Each structure stands twice: as C-alpha cells, then as structure tokens.
Length: 408
Ligand SMILES: [Zn+2]
Image (tube, rainbow, N blue to C red):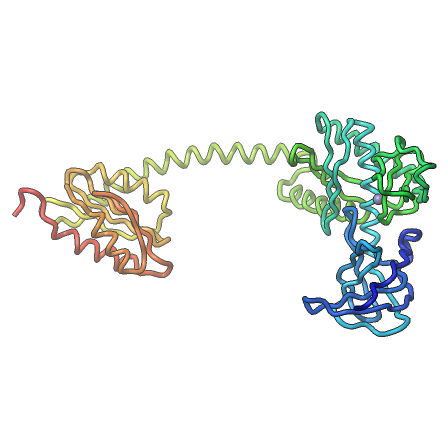
C-alpha cells in the first residue's frame, strides 16, 4: 500500500498573481480514463471549489486540464501525459486565472450590493467559462433594484478599494460581521474583505484592489427555484460583451439609417408594417385563390360527370391549401395539387362521392412517401427529390375509373 501524499502547500491562498513557479513533483499516477494526476509539494494552481473554476496551464510542457483537492488537502493536477521528475517548471494560464479573479471578486461586491440595496441574500454562486451567476433569495427583484445594485457595485470598483485577505482564529472572529456565518468545523477562517464594504470567509483567488475589475455588468435576471438568478460579467469579459453588443447596435443603426436612440422606433414601425402587410396579403391570397380555382376548373379534364384538376404548382403549401378549399366548393370536381415541397393535397367536392384517401395514400407510399386523410380528402408528403407529377398521374389513373353511383 502506498502512503497518501502530504497535504499540498497552497501558495495561491497568499498570492493570486504568481503564475510561473517551480515545484517538486511528488507523484504522477495514471487515472482510469488514461490521463494522469500529478501531485506537487507546493502549487499556485487553484483547484475547483467554492463555485470557482480550476486553473489551467502546463507542468513542464504537459497541459494541465483540471485541478482538484481531496479531503486530506492534497491538490491533484490532471495532466494529459506523464510529467518529468524532481523539480518541474509550472505555468498557469493567466488570462483564465485573471478572469476568475475578476468574477470572484465581482461576485463578492455584487452580492453585498444586492443586500444593501434590496435585502437580497446570495445563496449560491456559479462560475462558467462564459458567464457567471449568483442566485439571490429575497422579497422581490425589480429593474430598479438591479440597476441600483449594479451602480453601487461599480462605485465600489471605481473607488479602487483594497481587497484584504487575512486568517483569523474563530475565537477572535465577529461572526455577525460576516456576510455568511462560518461553518462550525472551521477553526481558522480565511477572510476576504472588500475594504469597508464586505467581509466573508472564502478560499478563492481575488484581486488586490477593486479598480482592477474596471466594470461589473448585470446582463439579466431570471427566476430559478424560488430565487432570482443574476447573470453578470466583470473585467475583460464585460468589456468584450459591451464591444460585441455595441457592434450589433452600430450595424442595426446603419441598416435602419438612424441613430442608436432611433432603432427601437424603427423596429416597432417595421413590426407594425409587417402585421399590416400580412393582413393585406392574406386577403389578397384568398381572392387570388378563388380566381385561380375558377380558371383551373375551366381547364380541368372531364371524365364522365366528373372534372379532374391535376396540377403541380410553384406555390407554397399555405396557398395550395387555400386553392384546395376553393376547389372543394366546385361541382363534381376532384383536385390533385402538388407543391414544390413534395406535398400533395387531394380533395374531392362532396357531390362527387369519391372516396380518394385510400388510393392516394397507397400511391404516395409506393413513391416512398406517406400520408393520411379521410374520405374525399388526403394530405400526402413525398420524400425530397421525388417525382410529384408522376405520383399525381398515378393517383389520377386510380381515381378516374371509380364509378359514380348510378353511372354504368
Ligand atoms: Zn471569494
């Protein structure tokens, strides 16, 4: 049995900014999934915990893709292959670490701001690669509360307050002064104080001064299991978000040939114009369908007492539906209408007494399609690329020999 390693010296607790360091490799063992878990005597790599994502980087020239800590305080670095022996050089991905520092510190500030403004207490924090959220629990959240909290948080950023990390023994601690009371099993607390604004026990990585965040932006809020979920970005990600959205607004402004403040009016006008046009088009389509149905009946094939309208139309399904309902009103008329999407509508006016559904569906199926309907109506769908005209011809052949009652 191998001895489990001694707890790792966690250098990130005292220094969030060092990202290049050397350490001694304690072990590097193969995992079930084929990757390796490297243990160092000391590390600046932050293991995933407390809502904060782990760091990434390299040990030697091997990628570190995950970092975790076990109950005994040993930090494991998930690496893609075996790393060297003895002293190894390590490099943490600074951009990613810095984003985590910005969002973790931003979360402390925002969580306190929501309490001060709206008595909304943070119950959980989630850090993602794209967006971070806090869930706040409290009486209500309104746009005004969100705006005011965001403003307060950004005032604290602009004031460039110190972020002080200190270890305090439980007996020396004013537990009531903490945003969240310390768990009972913690003897020495690592307190993170945003000077004069917020104190809480936390083991994450934070900035030295709030000004480093530059900006905290709330993106949206939504209800989440009895709480309100607040999405936010801070630092570089907030700036990138602003740039992306600003570019969209700039393009819209160009499309609508108006200033930014005029875009909403233009969109409303566009929506209202579209509604009016849709209404007009619907009325016009109905008239046109009547007119075209009349013309189609005029040129229909006559078989005994019945007329057959058999056509492939370059019309959309919606219009073909209108045509079919007009044709159904005509005397002794069976209509077989194909459209460009491979859809076929078969409809027989009631006086024809033609039960076309079964025959029509059979023809569609033999062409690899499907369909359904009842009595004098069938809606069929042929597969892409199928010969619609050919199937219409087959349905026509099957129907034209059907006897009308009283005919011989
Ligand atoms: Zn923290």
